[in-house]
Image (cartoon, rainbow, N blue to C red; front, side, top):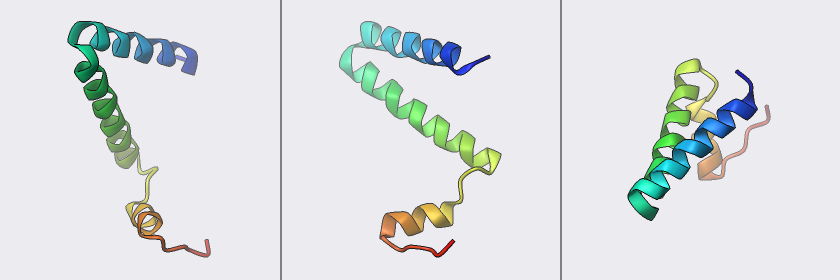
Length: 63
């Protein structure tokens, strides 16, 4: 499955949520999709929470 198909599926889902539930459904679906993406990256080990925290608090690393 390539990224175009994934993008079409996500767009269809968000459009459905927007039409069915209005702006609240649209915003809610976007928020939950972002949370799911972050959790998926955490499970795969592609996100280092220490680096994320350092970036949010303004600390910089040399690596």
